Length: 425
Picture 1 (cartoon, rainbow, N blue to C red):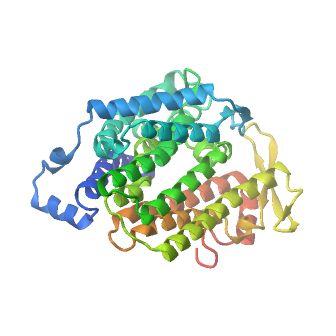
Picture 2 (picture 1 turned 45 degrees about the horizontal axis):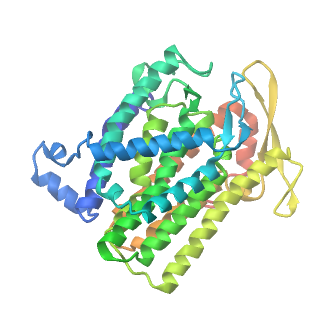
Picture 3 (picture 1 turned 90 degrees about the vertical axis):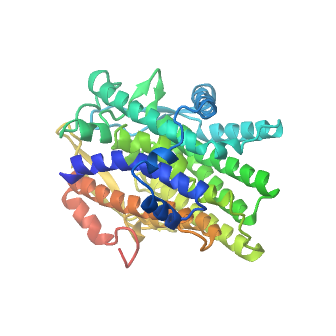
């Protein structure tokens, strides 16, 4: 099928190319997709070869190696409570050290200390093409290693082929919870490399703007501040993330690992990447309004996740927005021939739509992209991508939940009829 074979082949082939084209467009073509299109039309088949940055740049690899080593060390040495995540269908229960927020604070503190000591962090922007190029190639080989690891020496029994052969296994992964020398692969790639770079990279872009123009614009300040708040929220809730569909159901393959090692550092930071060389002035009223609106959506996104987590922890014996929690007791087969139960929340944020938190996620991203105003489309690419990603995820979640809960899911969908946007979709 398309989703099992041809879709993965297309994405594996096109995504590395698109990452480099996006970087080239923003950093070398003033963020103009029109200029990119014109260049490609006027050029020959060697166009990609000419613009592709070196994947073996010494300085870029020094930056990658030092950053990765620092994050790996923090995962091990910083204190944190043991967190027991949701058990898998085979009964395996992942255990994590909950030190994400502390790792973020230490990372940001180290960044400030290095910059105060004279380090020009704007070099990350200058070498971004080489960094992304190097990570593109490295991550493709890492995913190949994870493919063989899951088949031949997995960390847990949640492993093996997905069917349809090499392509699907490489793309979706062959192991749910791989560990290498004690480090959890998905926690590193998703959280400590990808999400952490999102925050650090933005600061480097802001430093680049300061180096070029002698000041940091209010547009850059608002965009970076909102994203840092969002990233802080993510790490505060990191253990909750380790219990989401990304971790519980998506194996460690190209989709997750390459995406977090390459796609996140490029696409997720694209608004800040664009603003680095475009110091747009918003004025006090607009910048304040965007910042406060963005803070509201980030809070709402956090509160939706918190609400569901609290509801589950209290097994439904709690109040939601001042009223007793309403829910469906859904029975399902736990994979061992035994009956188990889940509670499906019907009120609060989760009564507005089945994925209302996607609305707040997209709205937050729009608020930190809007400081670019209507200058170019490129700083809004992340928002466009996020809409497509979350719509696809909502359909995948619906298929998975209908398969798991059966008639109970049908009742739930009748009670909460809207998938994402109330009264619309």
